[in-house]
Image 1: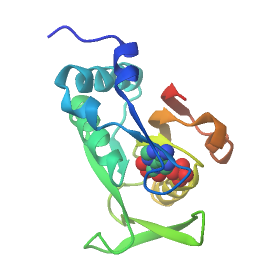
Image 2 (image 1 turned 180 degrees about the horizontal axis):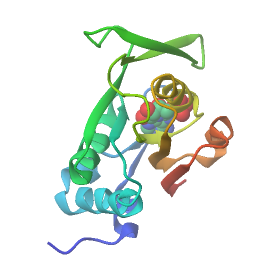
Image 3 (image 1 turned 45 degrees about the vertical axis):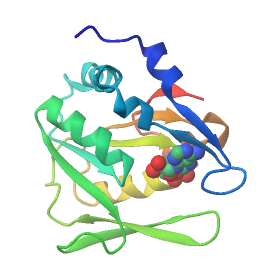
Image 4 (image 1 turned 180 degrees about the vertical axis):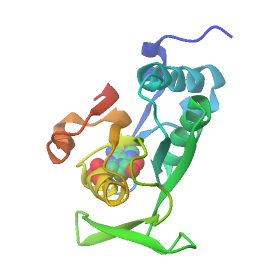
Length: 176
Ligand code: AMP
């Protein structure tokens, strides 16, 4: 299979105005996932970037972080760990809070999901304000201090999420 260019992948991201509420420009990645060559291209780019980093575990954030994260973990030949919204994980968890536009929410990780010293790559589909990923990093660091990468398919640069993740090895494939 010959892979498409990265520009073709970017052109396939669909922007839906006012979803799920007025003022949000929602970046819909489902057209990429529907196309096996485009999906493979994304995973290939991330694999090239991280294959020499001796990653032990990929941590994906609910829910689109699961899709990219699980495929990436499989391609790297390492395990996958989910970080989920409050109340979804069945075993004993650690929790972290993060701010939403109104109020706050919590995400959780199983307390035995990452072992001390394991080299972790965190993945989500999109970086907006950075609150979700900052909380996810806090959770992972309570289990292992070896966060060797945090990566996104899309970074919405106007929202300055990067500022909440200073000092961390951040990589985004597309900046919009
Ligand atoms: P934030 O914590 O503000 O960085 O928000 C990031 C999380 O919310 C990610 O898990 C994204 O999937 C989701 N998200 C936030 N804004 C958007 C958007 N404009 N389009 C698609 N997903 C978004």
